Length: 204
Image (cartoon, rainbow, N blue to C red; front, side, top):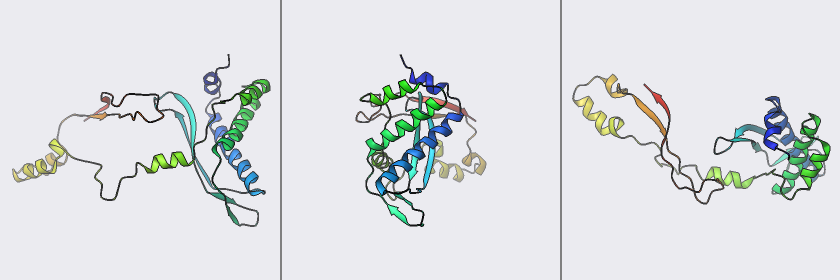
């Protein structure tokens, strides 16, 4: 049985660069097919090797211009992207990379491409919508202070004549605590709404 996890884990750090180039090549091929001529888009690629559960899940985040420049220096704006078509081209580029490195046989590459679900996915505008939904409204407070850090408490300490150093940096140990909330409607494998706090560090 083919283990994709084993294949990707044996590729080495250099493979991530190849994965990025495969994505760029896929976008260039797709843009050329739409425009009828080669276009040079602007692309920024961020590689991430883990998923929501910190599991091994190599994937890419890309910021791509809505079109590209032709040989004459004219920028051509392209219509809505077809994620499924782009995912198909990307799958072929990645599998070609694996075959070239001797990590996958050509027969297996063709077999994977024949599967109804290859495991390669592209989410363009859906990702943008999910990111922009987290941009806070103008004037919305996202950081709040309580207890020793509350403004009212700090004001009382100053009036009591305690040194400003004590107010700015209370000499106590504290924990950095991360609390995760999971949305039951999200694509995450988690179905829970709330998980107990996880202590991720201790600072002084």
